[in-house]
Length: 310
Image (cartoon, rainbow, N blue to C red):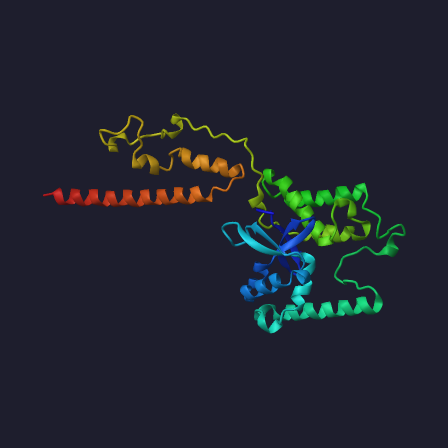
C-alpha cells in the first residue's frame, strides 16, 4: 500500500485520518502520539514489539497533514485504537487533553463492565430513531430508495461549495468516511436503524484536505507557441544590440500586463490536478530575484546620472 488517500473521520471531537487496507480502516499513529505530547520513539517500539496485541501493523507511504511529502508511516487498525488509548498514562499527556483521556478511559471501563455483566453495551451519544415510532423498523432492514436519495442530496449539498472537478472524489471520500464511522463495508449494509445517525454524520463532516485529491486529467491545453511570449508593449530600447530578434527585456518580464506563458502553464497543470509546488517555488524565487536585480540596476543608473551632472 503506497501513496494512499487520507480519509478524515470525526473521532471524539477530533479528526483522525484513515487509510484502507484489506477493507479495514487503519490510522497513522505518529500524528496521534505526537498530538498527545507523547514520545513517538517509545510508542513506535511498543507497537512494533507486540503485533498480535495491536493487530497487523502496516507500514505505508502516505503524506500526513502538516508534512510536505509522503513518508513511510506506521498505521494501526482503527478497531485497536481504543485499546491502545487505555494503556496511556494520563499524567504523561498534554495537560489540555488529560481530562479527556481520563473521561474516555472511565467510559471504556463502564462499557466493558456492561458487556460482561449484561451481555451488551450502548453508546448514549449515538443518534438512533425510536423503534416504537415505526413498527416496521428493524435493525437489519436496509434503507429504502427514498432514504438513498435523501442521503445523496445531503452529500451533494455538502460538496457543492467545492470546484466541480472535486465533486466525484469528494463524494467518494465522504462515503468511505461514513462507512468507517458506522463500521460497515458498503451502502447495502446501512440500515434504517442507523439512517438518522448517517445523516447527522454527513451534516457534521468537515471537508478536510479534499482539494488535494483533484483527479488528474490529460485533457489540458499545454500549447504555448512563440507568440504567447510577446508582451502587449515592449521595452526594446533596453535590449542590448546583440539581443535576439524576439528577445525579452527585464521590463517586459516584470510588467503587470505581460502574458507570462510560464505562469499560465503552471496554472493549467495545477488545475489538471498535478502537484507543481516545486516549480511554483522556483518561479516565484526567480521573479523576486529579477525584481531585486532590476531595482539595484535602477539605483546604479540614478547614481551614475547624478555624478555626471556639473
